[in-house]
Image (cartoon, rainbow, N blue to C red; front, side, top):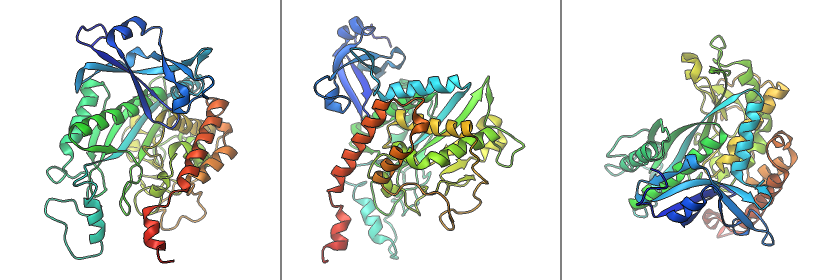
Length: 443
């Protein structure tokens, strides 16, 4: 569909703020047709944390390749935009950072291929909010779960009708593929007890993959809402059950060849890939400020729920933060690194860019990651580096270790991001968690 179609009524201009929230302003279709190449002065940057109130006007310039009709509302369309100020491109626009990351990796002589395993929950107020709590009460008892429900932590790849959200997930995948031309490669129910699902989303380059992730979250929320469900991207919405990750798959290519592949290597990966892993391990603690950027993120990063806490790597090992899939041996094109600590609360433009830069710094400095970890890292981690245990700790690490980000991240972005996350951590530190009443009410 083109913006000139006569039945088009409104066009939503989408952009992402610094914390990763998708924002939208709509303009009439005729206005869009007139100004789509000039942009729209429609954004008050001070209201979304991108500028002070004294100079807050932003222009949104549409990226024409991202224009799509909304399948659930054909008289409307959406387009992703770039942010500009009166003096040029906004240096705190997260997509600007992603674009600079793509330019930087090309300047280094590489092409980056990315993929994301986007995990999230689909639940409604009658079942998927209450049922998990009932399941927790049954843990340790001999009472079986009700017929047709998912047993505790037994949801992985279950089929319908036990998988009660299957039809919603299929619709989300179909809309992304047909309506938005995003190549969703797999969908399934995840491990958690109720309504946890996963979409596998590939992309070429940081900006494109981040666009795809934001679009997937937007579509999931809209499709779920139409079915009276809610798509929830909190890393840890329920206690005592698996949380949601956003595992990042990454490989570097040149002239059609996968530079991470080495069929003669025991892991199936090249020395270049090993140096990239070394960079992730070296900078993983500061990187967490982008890949795990919320207070809730650190409720997921605890042992026992398939979420990594140790910065080590392994072959086909899901207890490590960095995993090399076994497919690396079967096909050179499949050789890649899976970084497992990120979660879906991350701003994908910043998280993907920072992850790429950490790995490239490992290549630049030839940081050797050591041997792959052979066993369950939760059982005997030894002296392995540990991911931060809180958002505060991650912010402190980012303030200490950020030089590897400097080729792409602007000073303005780093300063504003750190300031924003400090305020967030301080605000939430004042709110007691419900479990604290249970533990401390009689102290």
